[in-house]
Image 1 (tube, rainbow, N blue to C red):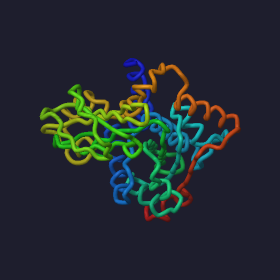
Image 2: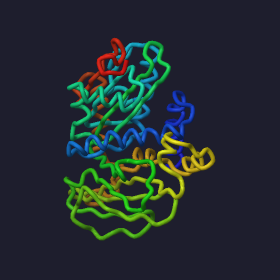
Image 3: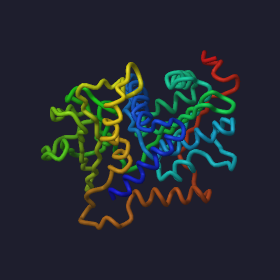
Image 4: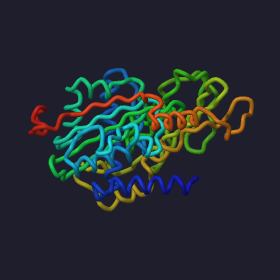
Length: 329
């Protein structure tokens, strides 16, 4: 299992590195972008999203394809859409949305453009999404930049999100959002490998105190939903003397400490992709029996055969006269 996680993370970093070179910095930057999306969603009383490895993989690969072809469209040259790309990356979704943009020089400008377009805004502010994928390609052949965003939800995956999915924290006091709390009957949590809390009434927000030491810390939550118990976790780097903005690329950088920090943490994305799983089946049913996740995969096979319609929302920011309509000329 650990080997599979490691290979998955290496693959993700390799994809991102093709566009950015400094893969670890891009991973931290992707978390910074996710925080911006989550701040926006919180302003509209919507739950935050968790950065997801498979969605990032699919979004990044498609952003690079669009940058090469110069054709900004939801269907590729073979007519394949976001549902195919997400499934091919291993993300078996219940709900899925895609936003594309071209020509905006920064993530903030792309977000601003999407918010001023009804279709994109509807995707960004859909309450049912739980996870996020981000892709970016620079030096596009026709447009300066291409941005791809995938928003999704898996039926039985309930992500845990620390500090709106920030890469690092400068205080041990953190806020944790728990997806699925509204559906659960009880919940409990633990920090790192400590003792579990008592089972308690479910709450969407937890206030947790991490140990007062620099390094990676993990918050794990178990939810009792019916006769099943679901577990998910997230991690964050509690920093000492280094400033988070320096990791994200702003301000004067610390070239000696930053690579070390990024090397010692997966920044939460691997755990977000692999950490949600059923840890208890009803009546002692074996884990290999067919369950909701298997049914989800079967549904995607049916979709590929054209036998069912996926729940897919797409929106595209028109690239004609790149970004001029949005003040980014």
